[in-house]
Image (cartoon, rainbow, N blue to C red; front, side):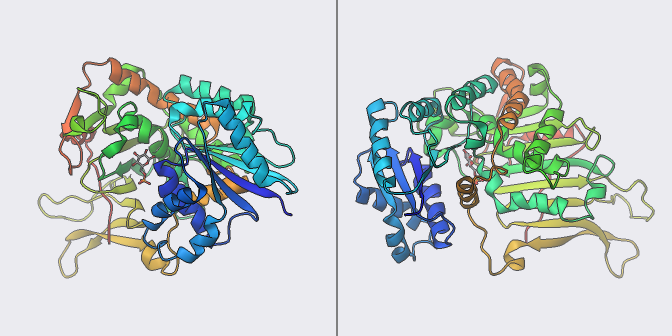
Length: 486
Ligand code: BG6
């Protein structure tokens, strides 16, 4: 019998498992990308039989439309699913999980185990302790790995404490801290765009770039997630991880070809170069907002000042980027769902055409659209035909759906789960990266908590955030840009 490969999902009855993890694992199975002899074991407090758990998971998978037609494939796949009821805070229940795993793996040459913590963040520490105490982390024959969802900590101190807990039972090579943005095709394409082409690199620096804008706008509001969100807010939920990841991919130096770790190391170098603010300075370089109606949401504390929108100015103090502002903005209940990176280039030094009264040259803009309508636009000036010198910005564009008509863009979790199973860590967060990211946002969080002169601006739903965020860029003589769509 070949070795067993068991994926243990802690918190298997939750939303993430049903909406993201199982669909991704099912897709991987359909693409024959899961290891031989794999099993998926769900562990959670709710009572389910194996069959009831399979049905629950099918409900999630089926909602994704395109997978709904694969009922026959699902029936075969579902045989690999089983469920163990238990509370991870209770040692006997973890022992029961251990027995179930031993039974599943019995008779196999060796057993690899991937533990996926799909549980509330405050349970990460206790779960890791219990996995360790029950002896489930011991590598006897096969490997043991643990995937930890974001948020990893709620500030630097708690992140370090959580890491110490992890280190008691796992070493860093066994820990896979996930940020699903890194699994997105378009985010990985940032690396290809920069490092598999030569034409952009010469202008990718402070000599040519005026500013960089990173926007992750969401139309959804907090919905039924207030229990988690109200205690976290937009900076912990989105900025410390997703937006800062994007920033590192845009700003990093080329990784070396010979070292697996180089990509992660280069990203950490960017974080170390980000200018550190005191809490008082940090609040002056940011705007916070809350959408109207947030306070009426289920589970929101009365009078909560949790921010659902943030706009932040950062500087990367190295030779490449010195003086170039990086503007980050993200929010819930906004006008559109758009994630994009905009690189605005400097205006030409001299206008040599007579443009006519009031006309100005627009500077070149490169828009890397991460989602939806994934693609890249490069905006430049063109002469309007048959007019003496009237100029108009035009777009050169690439879109995934027209360039790759046969390939659908996979869900981020597919790539990440496959990589974790194969032990490839480059798209996961190293501990030093996570800590540096907290060092960047902690002063802002602290400043917002303490400060009376950093107002929480209310903004309308379906808007582009508070007017104060526009004024914030106007202070620098700039405005928020939106890249191209089809
Ligand atoms: C999650 C956040 O990490 O990312 C959510 O917790 C957010 O609040 C989500 O909605 C956004 O992910 P995506 O892939 O839809 O951009």
